[in-house]
Length: 108
Image (tube, rainbow, N blue to C red; front, top):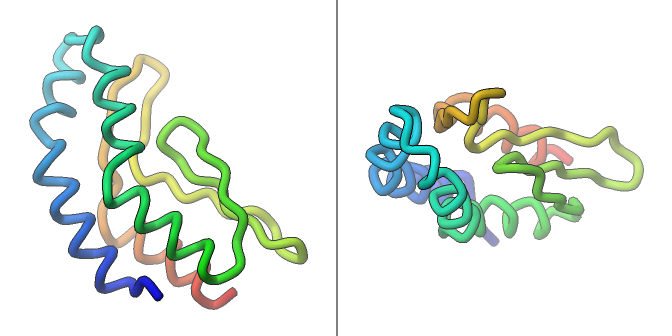
């Protein structure tokens, strides 16, 4: 089973891998937006978070760099790993916010 500690390591790798891309996208290089978004969604970080939720019985739905997770008897949880503003600026969510949501998933 994937642990929160493993996801934290993956998060740190993800952040260092994508921070330059995020800065470039946010400084008017819009043509790069979709490419960066696609690479992010295929990253180990996204895959590991999905696996973490699935192993705990949650169903996953991808919504524009935000994962929606839900169990049949629970309200859906929104897990924004990367936020996108209306003008397509990207912001990698801080680890503390992601960890809080992962804790809710782990509690079930």
